[in-house]
Image (cartoon, rainbow, N blue to C red; front, side, top):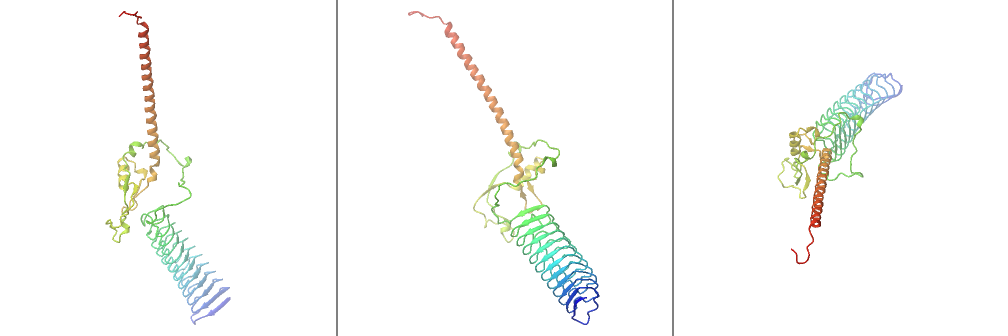
Amino acid sequence: MGIIFKGADRFLHNFGGNNTILGINSGNFTMTGIQNTAVGSNSLYSNSTGTTNTALGLSSLYFNTTGNQNSAFGHQSLYSNTTGVRNSALGYQALFNSTSGNNNTASGHLSMYFNTIGSGNSAQSYYSLFSNTTGDFNTAMGYQSLNSNTTGCQNTALGYSSGSLITVGSNLTVIGNNAQPTSGVANNQITLGNNAVTSLRCNVQTITSLSDIRDKKNIKDLTLGLDFLMKIKPRLFNWDKREWYENNISDGTKLQEIPTAGFIAQELDEVQTNENAEWLNLVLKDNPEKIEASYGNLLPVMVKAMQELKTENDMLKDRLSKFEQIVNELASDKKTSLSLINCNKPILKEGQK
């Protein structure tokens, strides 16, 4: 039967084997589950057939009935779990509302507090994944990381308040202090650092991307080149970001003194739209209030433009070579003619005209 300490008269019957129960109303209902450990008042209060659960703390795993292999450490941790399995909660009210979610790990005060059926999530630190309800396979590490995520899936956040804007967006990776995607509903993005980062450092200068010909179809020569580039306007400007101001309206008082070279996203968008080339994806418009540019997508166009210039230069060199050849031939012919004229001219004796 294991070790059983009845903490109150309401304790009913425990028919399971190898259970350890210590605390008022812990393991309170008839329990046939085996190898459970309940320490603390009301811990594993509702358990019936659940097995190999560990509850340590007031009302931890309170509503668990048939869930197995759960571990709850802390006041009301995994409080609402009923059928969920293989969950681990460490901290005050960690995984408090989770009922049937599986394979979750929550470590920290109020971590994954609102999770209900979300599974495969990992939250480390205070308030991390706090609002998650049904989102699956998210990883949050850092104070308040992914704290607004509700149904988003497969998100990864590392750092203080990282990904705190994400609500329903999925497959987002944000790394660094307060690192955020373009918006809370964006998908399939990676963000490194916040808006204060000024350098992206690495031992290599390029990012390797997928380019295998076996994964590409309808391969054709690019038609966009020099003409397209001539319509793009490189600019010199000073940053005066709206997010630097409390009312989100820049007034020039925080204008950055050192200028920066680059492009204007709206101007890039206008060019690619007019040229029916929006497929270039020079502009990211997931968040209309914060349009971003992808300068790197211009590289194929730049290469095409250089090839066109090389072809034009070769043609000009060929024409110049032919022109020089003609000039030389004409000069040679003129010299020959002059020589013949001189040869046919009679030799005059002295005094003759």
